[in-house]
Length: 355
Image 1: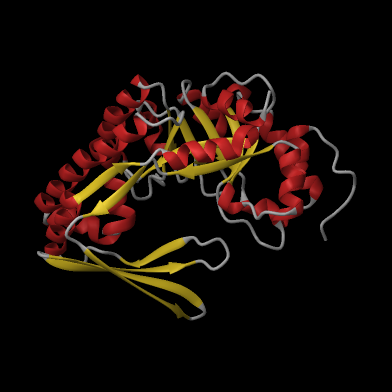
Image 2 (image 1 turned 30 degrees about the horizontal axis):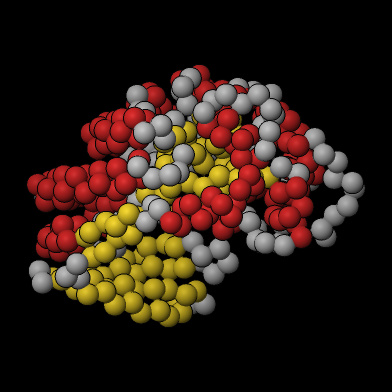
């Protein structure tokens, strides 16, 4: 089987050829080490949006700068009904972004964001997907990446948890009105993805029970997953959702979703509170892509090998794989990933080192 075939077999819960190992393409610096671990079986996860979003009647300005040695970006959106602004810090090595000031800061801002959502037009853009699949070939998988689902977009990008939870209590009508509109528009995006040439549809929802409690998940996340999952499955798509937090208290609700793959699953000891054994038991119809723990980069070769060997003894190999889905230390990732690739592929490290 090719690397792509191995990964897809896990996503479809039919794997019979060992445990695949992958990495987000933007987290794997190109070069000698990257080529070497790919030759030992590490697959590439490439993300491409199947659409373009155009904000009609919205003037956008962008300011870039540096704050305490870290680059930041300020984006301002001016509309006929008001303006909103966000401030984002950018991690210098991998480009990860952290929102420091959210777009919605006052009740009036909900009206401005609603205007932007109403005026946004989505254009089909399958060319990049098809080109990416041709370029990547059998070295990995291309995922049709869609925006976060509405509640998660409000929570993590537009409002932030502190204000959103207060607003849900004090001005629920404004939050609900915006959410209702967002869900309607988001369906358009998922239908574009459903009709795309990609086999896999992915969203970065970053689900964790710390913020998305069982009652919030049941009210805002579950119905949306069920709705879009239905027409994704009608088109034969594999529905993948990035859930990288604590999931113990929402595991039964996740089981009710039509999500096929829980991606970036956090193992216990890495921020997760649900064991892989229990997760696979409660989700018998789902595959799990676990995040390779970053702290392994600080361990010895023997520890890493024993950790992985112990882990794979407790998983259903038909529907499990590991993937690099978070930043790894720049000065330590090379040797760690080489060891991981060797353990999972069974290929000898030949006793050499990168240090």
